[in-house]
Image (tube, rainbow, N blue to C red):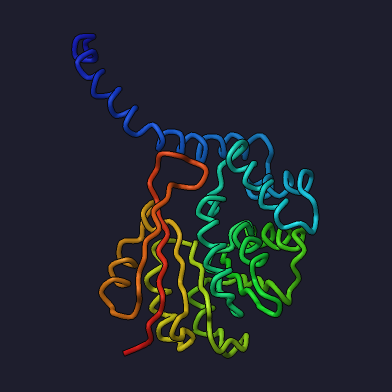
Length: 259
């Protein structure tokens, strides 16, 4: 049994750790503990709970209302790791500057970023959004359609990204990707980027925007982007969505062409 004197000696160190990592404790509480409790109480997934909230509080056919309601739910009710409103402005700006006609999203999750991308696309553009989890894809489909986007604007593909990328030309008629948004498993960032390089779908000026490259982090992806000579790289510093105090960032890669 630990004596009171020893416990007291460790108290300053414990308090220091709690203060230093308080935002990570908040993240653990909101992302893990609250989710576990709500899963037990409701019997449905966190993603389905988010959809039910959006369905009853947002205006159908209004993407801005869908996103604002989603942001409120994620910041005030339960945490979901969407791109969020602050980093979302970076995505919005790049889309408006480049006006891409063909966009690939890797990691649809609940459909938040798909709605955010679709609302900024020019007339006639198309978004291919890839999600490997069937249950998440079902929720995303409902949210994307509730926002007013049909299959001609947003096509949801329910398969692993490493199976989709090599077949985009053959199965979907994609000849060039103007813009790629990555927000799926971070360990997949580098292999999927290399698949894109080998697919011939990236052209000079194609943009790849990758979220969460600082936290949880994608160091191998960033290292390749810096050293390959294929990209102009910029890292946009930010904080983790819906949790202040945790540093994060988005990597913007502009493809320079294969050597």
